Image 1: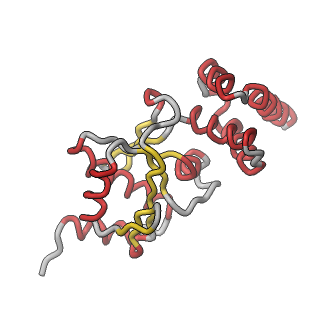
Image 2: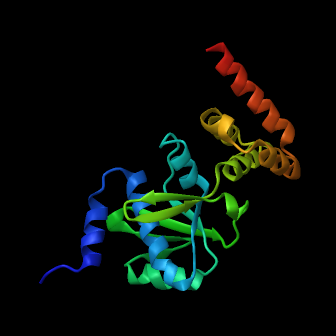
Length: 192
């Protein structure tokens, strides 16, 4: 019996050894599968951080925000995913995806569209991801998140939209810490 295009896709996806690439290809597939429902999922959290840090950060799942979880359920069940707690999981692909919310914490106009093969993945903007990590750094006293906020500044500092970033940090009560981290990064760069 010949395989279907869907079976060919899943087989090829399972053969992708690099986990980040496999998950990005899956996210592009999911984005296309949800398009007929008028839904545009956005990658957030650790998977977005893994993408922007070029794989330096590693996460076990994909966090996405999506406005229609009924459509997500329909699409993922048809694709052979099963629900385990808060995650949708497909063991043969080693892919777990979670939808922690339906509202993007940040600006939808800053979401970045990333071309993956013939598809696209929408990823939270760098500034909003940085604010997310900075919030965890300051409000939850997470030194790990402080480190990742600093890493994002190191990688992207000069290209960030600083007026937007400062406004968001002021609103979140983290402006002082943002400025301190940025000064550290600049001092480190000057020392090199």
